[in-house]
Length: 188
Image (cartoon, one colour):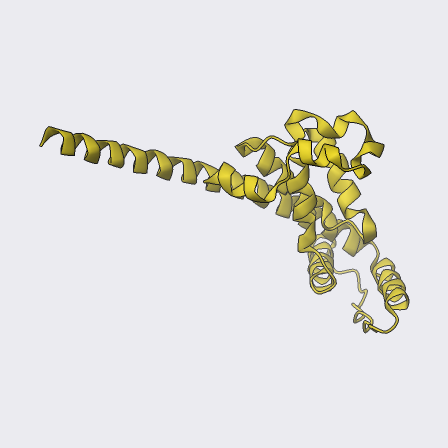
């Protein structure tokens, strides 16, 4: 089921080759390792996406694509996994990262200022205000983001590996039971 599950949602390299957008990246994007669905490539893609999902601004997907190219992991999985950060989750994740960074650096006396309100009628102004707020958080945020990104990447990588192995073991056991049942029916 693992490969079947992911193959339903992940486009093939042939389908992507038909699009003109990835052509700017050249033939490296179509390396078979970037499209193969196996335990290692999917787990690596999830790890790359989780790590790069905490990169500020619109650099998350390009960062995940570069990481997928560098580590030869599944590119579509890496890109899709970055979507866990969105306007609703980014502020809580950054607050968590700030708290982790502040804990790691020890008491520095800097008080946490509340994030700015998001004005939906002026999204660019709100995004700029959010960026200024994040820059004001400084070293605790930077260290916290690095720690949180590494932690999420490790949890994602090993989580997928464990889930994939457990699924394969269950499939083997089910096939073994089916073969035993069919051979027992054949003896009767």
